[in-house]
Length: 547
Image (cartoon, rainbow, N blue to C red):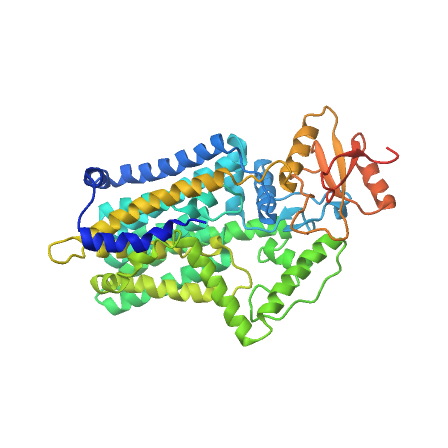
């Protein structure tokens, strides 16, 4: 299968031989870029609107994304809860039938995830559909990235970087699912942008921006956000000590005090949210879920947990799959190293834009010599990467808090490469322009791939959505009892409900046997009761026997 990066070996020799073969459109685009970049507010708006335009284009052309991954359903429950005007939900009657993955039922019915992504989905749900919240946060994250680039790079390169982030395949993918990434990316940009500005001038607004970014990270990616925030804070403190000549009173007034105010509000917000959901200000819903269901540890060096008593085979099978993956990493030091390298390779593949960023990163050593601030960014990034690779699991959005510094290093390397020349030929600039063409081609490929992402209406999640849509149009409420085969794949989970289970038009429940099913039906009277075999070749509704 053809890959865009196959053209890289052709691009570089061509640039060395032919010199500057750029078309006039490149010159005109460069002049336009400089004019817009001179007005930062306009540049930020342009980047955000570009991202929003692409997202709406997907929504119109390819349709609204259908949730598929466990995490997506967990976040959608969180958004639906907030859209109902509450932080959590009371445990529904017969809650054992509604237990599912990434949710807790006791002490309250809630998602296990932190609230930031759920709040975005709730805003989208109130205005139109939950995916609108994803599109808005993706646009804001791209604008925040552009704002951050202005702190690290010249204006023209800052705008170019913002446009590249808006068109990046990973950003496009995050804009078409419900399980996050954009919020952590934007929050990391606020931290990195505020940090860089504070290295030059101590201003309360920059430390406040940095504090807000840390608060958003605490509400989206707590562990990775904590790692990135601590590393950035330590780097800021060490830089101030090394720099010297700064009165500590000024540092406390313009840096520590604004951040302390933000952190005080953050502590109150998180404590209140935890208290409402778990009954304990210091106990996160995520921790309750771990204590209730998990057997695999969060970190590769932690021992497995004692297996709890499961009420449903599907949940148990999934947790055992997780544990099996963890144990494969622990079989030997060789296996652990291989698993760690595999996770690192996965992250590089996600962020290197089809490996196209490898070319400009060749100029990184020279960019580091030009700007000592980039050395600090590189050190923070390396420590951040090392501390997240010890997690058992890895997805691309786990690294989103530290991704802004990676993009800074890439754009700075592109800028350095653009200055390279020999024998009067500015071949480095030609390479950069050729890379821009390949990136545009890669973006088109990504758009086509995402537009064809729906495998058809026979996919289990599409079939599930079709059935729910049909039942929601019925005048009478429905109760659907879902059964599975013994060899059921736990990654194909049907039983997910909204925030208000008793008030929902359609309720999905697990089959727990005739006797317990009869009790469930008695608790939810006035509904048409259906049964469905989710593992059938073509799952379809059938009237529940005896109803």
